[in-house]
Image 1 (cartoon, rainbow, N blue to C red):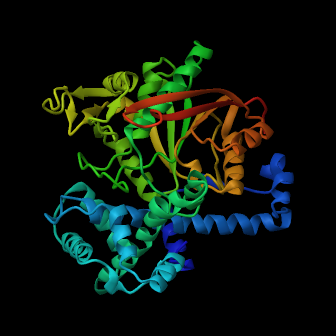
Image 2 (cartoon, rainbow, N blue to C red):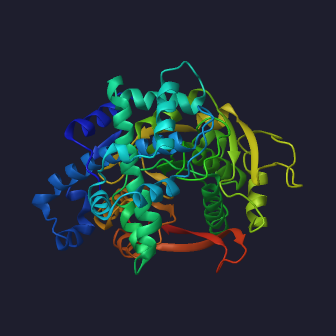
Image 3 (tube, rainbow, N blue to C red):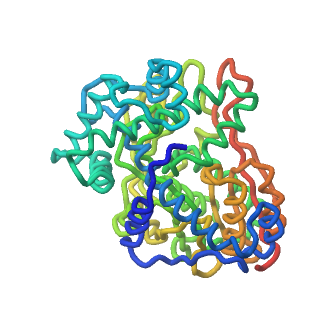
Length: 469
């Protein structure tokens, strides 16, 4: 990976986190991971090396938070139509154009270090980065621009250094995009190569409405297995914030964290929880996500819900997902008709399902936010009946995954349920050792793709805690 970080960068990120209020977390200890100690020792982490290892991971994760934020900044700079009329630039294609412009020696050096002359950055990219900086210095209150203005001011406080800093970030982000989209796809095992890339990249805040469907199906299984079950305390690890995805950016509504609201809606819809008896903790390593959700607790948001997947002549959303989207939001707020029909279908915009939901104060009161690095920290709270972690576990290497699972198991009450979508075989071995065996799994079909080997699917796993740690 490209080493941009320094101790000062990591400490700055941690300082931002501390500014959000008292952290309800404590650092994991060797005693905390007793069931996994033989596995950790086999990987070269004995008791004497554990504390330094955890500290290194914690500092690395602070750097990865910063890099993830800056990833989104570059994707926003290339794709947004709100701050400039300049043509949108697709990130992967920009990465390929950049690499193709380098001679053999320059290309090899860039792919090793992500460094090359800033003069190699294409003119259209330079123009969009310059336009972004002008917008940052303006008084424009467009919500995403406001978010990224705060990020630019914090990350690059010296104004005269910003343009060069943004160009260096562009090079870093393009290296990852090129490796993922072009180098990895030529490897013997593309999926495994991409997975390895994600375990070193910045920590993304990406989130999508489709993830709520997966959780809804998993909670439906919980309900079917135990119809009388009541869920009162919930921990959502890594709820995220929809800022600027790597591709196909669609700017409708302000940045929002969908998952907490989708989880609360599903719990109410399925009769697993009641508004007057529910405590949902959204725990994220990114202090900006935590700050956003804390504001939502006090001021219930208006959610602009838009499907990430776009229907077209070759892509068709499944009827089950469409039914889920039609119900989404009814249990937590007022649903409004949002757009005029397009493609002959009500509630669609540019082939995407869309609606708005005004969240009720009762639902917002059920939600609070805490800062948490789930790999190196544990919340000092009462046990949870349900823990959800979707689309975050791929960012952890095998040892980090072990520590995260140890923290999840410790946070669950006996009989509590852990819901995730991480397909790595290591998960079953580690969770079984922690008294958290797999109970059920389900596959969710989200869309059919003409000409593809199969539909777009995701899977959800349910674990139930059988022992106390």
